[in-house]
Length: 282
Image 1 (cartoon, helix red, strand yellow):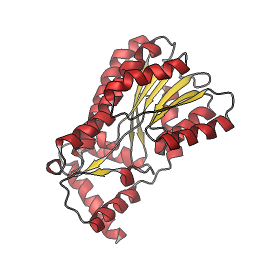
Image 2 (cartoon, one colour):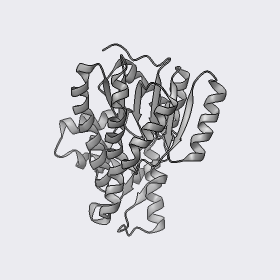
Image 3 (tube, one colour):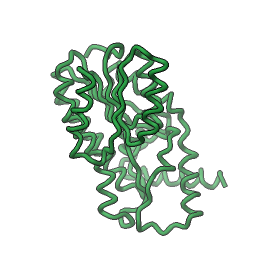
Image 4 (cartoon, one colour):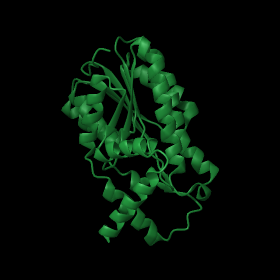
């Protein structure tokens, strides 16, 4: 495939108001892409758009406040984007939510909420924007999975189910769309310094004390080390090169290798490493 060209194209980006999405928005604008920015955080979305418009006055930047958990309304979201942008060349499904707790500690409703935002919304966004992408010469799709789309730690049943699903869906999509000249990249970020640990919901059956919950959040935040700006550069470099898959961060590369070497017993190693880090931090 030809390299992807950012300048003059239009990128649709979900989860744009914070974390990796915020960094992606800034880097896309720097590269000359018009933007349709999507997030449920209206205030953060408008603040980002105002900053980007000041810095890049020639770009057409629109905001679309939307809760991706409302999967059935995504066709209307797409229509709103199409009313303001005549062409779409890049779709980045970046938004995601997290839920802590063992499978027996989370309700089916909580489990389904994660699937709706993290996976079903990705499918619905691809379905809604695929006709517009097909009309372009060298379009591209990016679906953000996770390191938890490679390995499945305990306490992350809902999140892992959604991210493994994103991985499988993206691989199928890549095989189906390659003959049409549409590239697909699946992204597996490791510990990127975002707010996901602080914003994660906790299953209704989790009986941890407030002190225990705070300790778990702090432990998670300690492994979120990679600068989102660095993650954005890695992702967009992969888009430009039409890479089918990108591992973001040394920890993602290590876990990917470990799972390949010890597919049935990798969790024993990861548990020991995680417990060792916690002991050294106390």
